[in-house]
Amino acid sequence: QVQLQESGPGLVKPSQTLSLTCTVSGGSISSGSYYWSWIRQPAGKGLEWIGRIYTSGSTNYNPSLKSRVTISVDTSKNQFSLKLSSVTAADTAVYYCARGDLVTMDLDYWGQGTLVTVSS
Amino acid sequence: DIQLTQSPSFLSASVGDRVTITCRASQGISSYLAWYQQKPGKAPKLLIYAASTLQSGVPSRFSGSGSGTEFTLTISSLQPEDFATYYCQQLNSYPPALTFGGGTKVEIK
Image (cartoon, rainbow over all chains, first blue to last red; front, side, top):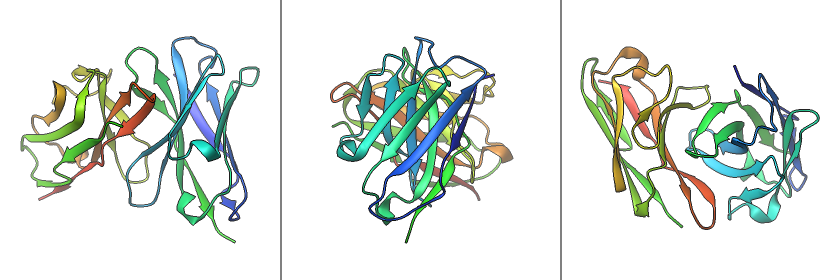
């Protein structure tokens, strides 16, 4: 059973960089059948896709966040990571990592989510 | 960019009711349309992929249909555990990006 677990600071100061890591267990992140994605959800609001990375290292980002987002993968640790720079209070949200199917494009396994608050 | 609009955004229903949620795309999309269920404080759970394929372990009272610009999620007989928020999701071809609908909250009548 594939499991994903987000980790990282729960509090980030405005203008700083938010950094989160997703650790994958129960399967290899190097599998060519999947991509790895970050999604966020502000309190009481809907889901916003942040971006994704393939095991090749190729990435796609949400155009509205593209200038501030970097997603990377560390296959040796079975992890992928998110960096979001120049954060503001609007970036306060629950951040999820998820596995995506390369054929059907859905997100079939999700982490439990981690709340990141941007505040001084 | 393709936008996904869900309707209704809020739905009040009783146990045993048949419920239908619609997801409309701003332009024709592939059939790679997925539906998720999210309960408070939990991560979304995949229910339906490729518009109509039931994810393993999901009860058969859930079904999906549609093509082009209009897709539907149907719950044939609403159960107490089905009260949740439902989201549709698809992949834009260019620029390549995932898009979610705004969500439909299903509450007890």
